[in-house]
Length: 164
Image 1 (cartoon, rainbow, N blue to C red):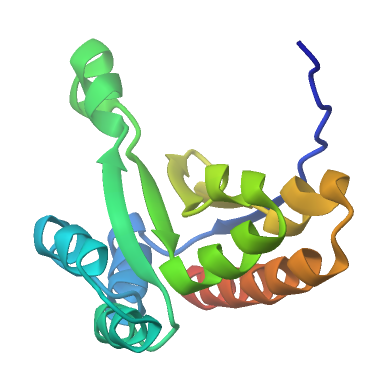
Image 2 (cartoon, rainbow, N blue to C red):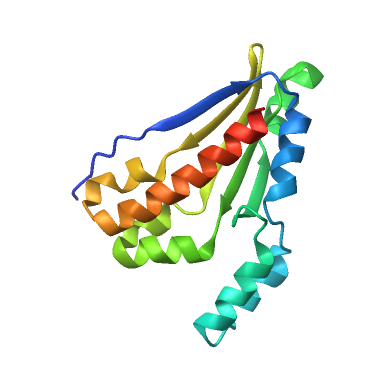
């Protein structure tokens, strides 16, 4: 079976802001739909206009929404106790942006929504994001890369603002 080599570019910042402040900033500008209601609603949409309306209501002012949040620190705390670092993985995106990319490069659907990692370390909170443009580059589709560049710019601006 063929295996593709994909070189990933990771956008990373280190913030001196407390993790809770960074999460609060992100929470204030990313939509938080009830996914148990949102998923069936988009599955039952009959038209693209209906889908766009549902997504528009779900996203925050950034045009992005949170699909899931994983408290990775829970696992660390089981082994290290309360001294364990805090670490969150947020799955963030927009179904309409994913559609634009996946119509051009079907494998793009495996990379969306994107991951934002917030990891509390001794030198500050590390904020990381794997650039969608690097994930789609091997496919050589200029139109998909353009959509990915716009998404990367949106996410990186959001993370820079959250980092302070």
